[in-house]
Image 1 (cartoon, rainbow, N blue to C red):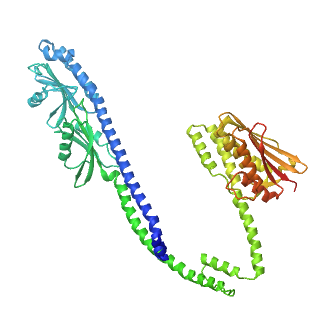
Image 2: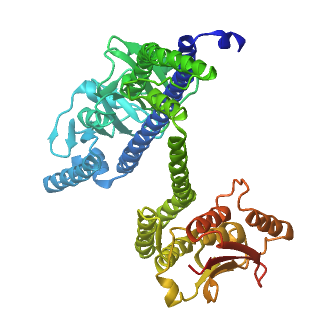
Image 3: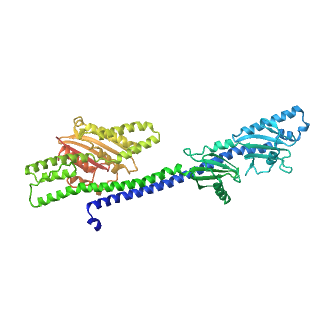
Length: 573
C-alpha cells in the first residue's frame, strides 16, 4: 500500500483499471469452462438417453416378430405343407400355399424393418414368401438352418444382411421340416439411424453381436475400426452403455454406445464435438481477445485521463496557494465544459463579492429544499415491484385469468400514479391510489388481511396533499404489523375534520408491537431534525411538514386492538 501511495496518477490509474479488469476476465473464463462442462454433461446424458430409447424401440418392434415367428412353427397350414403335401389334392395344396402366404404377409407388414418373410420347405424344394413361390439358394438355406436363442441374440448374418430365422425341427436334422425366415431391411435401419443428428451433425451406427456387421446413417467417421475396438473392449468388460471419444481427420467425435441384451445389437451414436462445444470454445477465445483489447483501451484511456486531469489540477493547486496568501483577485479562464469547469466556476464564486455570495446561498437553499422534497418523494420501496411481478407470474402460471385482469389493471393504475409528474395531488386521488395498492396486496395476502377505508369528507376530497404520503403508512401496517401474523388481520383508514384542521388515522390490529418498539417509534417522531436511516414514518413526517408547515405532525400510539395507530394531523391552512 505504501508503494501504491508513492506512485503518480498514471500508474495508479492503470493499476486500478487492471484490478477491475482481471477479476472480470477470470470470472468470464471460469463461467465459460463451467458452461462447457455443463453443456457436455447435458449432451452426454441426452445422447445416452436417445441411445437407450432407440434400443428399447427396436426391442419393441422385433419382440412381437420373434414371438409370432415362434408361434408359426405350430401353424397347421405350414406343418401340412412340410409333412403332408404329398397326399394333398391340387386344390388343398394350392389353398394351403395361399393360407401360408397370408400369414407371411402379416409377418412382413408387422414392422417396417422386415424386407421379406418366407418359409423354406426342403420337401418341396421351394420357399413360400408373402408374394412368391419359388426355389431357394442352397447356401442361403444352409446359412438359415442354425439354432439360435431368440430371446438373447436372435439375428443371423448372411451376405451382409440380418435375418431372423427359426428352423423346425430344432433336433437333427435341423430344419428338415421347414425354416421360417425374415430378412431385415438395411434401408429401413439406415433411414431410422439418420434421424439421430444435432443441427444436421452427427449420425449413428447399428452393429451386430460381434460388431462384424453394421449399418450407418447420418455423418459418421470414415473409419469405424477404432471405435469398434474400443466398444468391443467395453462390452467385454461388462459395460452395456457409455461413451468414448475418437478423433479422425474431420474432427473429434463423441461415440455413445448402447447394447440390447434381448437383440444382441449395439447402437453407437456419433456427435461432432464442435456442434455443441464449439460455440463455447469460440466464446472463450473471444474472451481472451476482449481482455487484450481492454488492456490496450485501458492504457490509452489512463494516459488520456492523466493528461486531462494533470494540467487542470496544477492550475487549481496554484490558485489555492494564491488564495492562502490572501489574493482574491485570481480568476480562472477555462474554456472546456468538463468537471474542472464547474470547480473553477465555484472557485470564482467563492472569491466574488459578498452580495453575490449571499444570493448564491439563497438560491442554493431553495434548490436544496426542492431537491430534498424530490428525494423524499422518491423513497418508495422497490421490492413492491418485484413482489407484484412475482404475484402476476404466479397468477398467470396458475391460469387464474379472472384475477390476472383486475390485478394488471390495479398495477397499471399504481405505476401510472407513481410516475405522475406532480408534487401534490387531491386527497381523493391519493385515496384511490391507496385502494389500488391494497387491491394488489390482496392478491398476495388474499383474505388474510382485511382493509377498511372510511369516507373522505367532501371538504377534504379536493385538498392538495403530497403525492405518495399515505401509501407508506398502509405499507408499514402490512410489513411490520400483519405480514408475519398467522391469524387474520385488519387495517383501518379513517378521515376526520376538526376545528384546528383534519386527521387521517391509519391503524392495524397486529400483536407484535411491544412497549420498547412503541417507545422507539414515538422517540423517532418526536425528534424531526435528528438524522435517521428510516425511510417509512420519518419520510412521511418530513414530507407533510415540508408541504403543510411545521404545525403538521405525525403521532404514534397504540390502537384499541393492540396494534400501531398513526395519526396524520393536517393544520388549517
